[in-house]
Amino acid sequence: MGLAVFGGTFDPVHFGHLRSAVEVRQALGIAKVKLIPAGIPAHRGRPVSEPAQRLEMLRRAIEGVGYLQVDDREIARGGTSYMIETLESIRAEVGADLPLSLVLGSDAFAQLHQWHRWRELVDVAHLVILHRPFAELTIDAQVSAWVNDRRASADQLLAQPAGLVCDLQLTQLDISATEIRRLVEAGEPIEYLLPAGVIDYIRQQALYAEAT
Image (cartoon, rainbow, N blue to C red; front, side, top):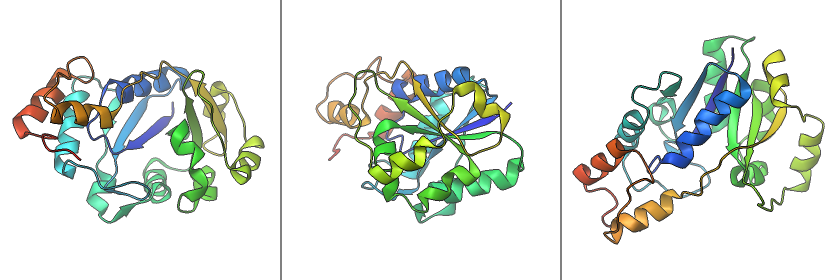
């Protein structure tokens, strides 16, 4: 039925991430979504929390939701995390024929031309771009031309294993991990921005109390 990959730092994971993962599964008609925390991100600063802590927050966040999976391969691999390498390793596991999709926020998509081996992504997977309602998006000219020949609707992605680009507009809750860290540091409440189990863990571990 297909598989989607949703990467990020998840520092911390919040309802914006989780609701997007749920709606992507529904929109694409796929079986599972893998949530893959980056080890060392290639295009942003190191996460504030430790890899093991980000994994534990993810596990608590999706507990009891069988179609969401935490995948630790980027952290276990070590070094800088490159999505093309992650997709290639997943493709080797699932075989050549399973429809595989990489989920990207529109902000990440706008920087796609800076990614390692970015043109090869569609050799391994489809790209699913999540757009925020009313948001303006400036795309690099070479990416725009590259994408235009590959546009497809959500229902077309299950017909082949890779190679297409699909635009989705989902609920896209306006929640920011950066803002959550700021609230924790300021001693402000973070209830209803992320799962209660994750909030409990943040407080138990004293995470983000001195976030930068």
